Length: 70
Image (cartoon, rainbow, N blue to C red; front, side, top):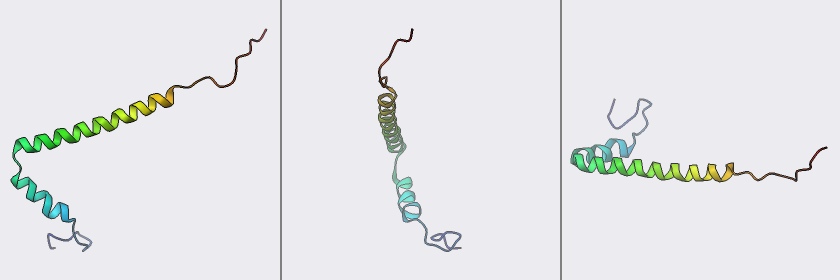
């Protein structure tokens, strides 16, 4: 099987076959760490947005009016 095809005979992913190995060979450990940390920070930002939205939706105002029952 050719390295540029999947088991099904379809063309492989250009990124996986060419771009990713290219960068792996040329990136230093510090560069890898930087991009890993940036991905973590991006995910933390998304989590913060989700947490804020959940908090906003969780604030519920009572519907209707309260009527005292005797």
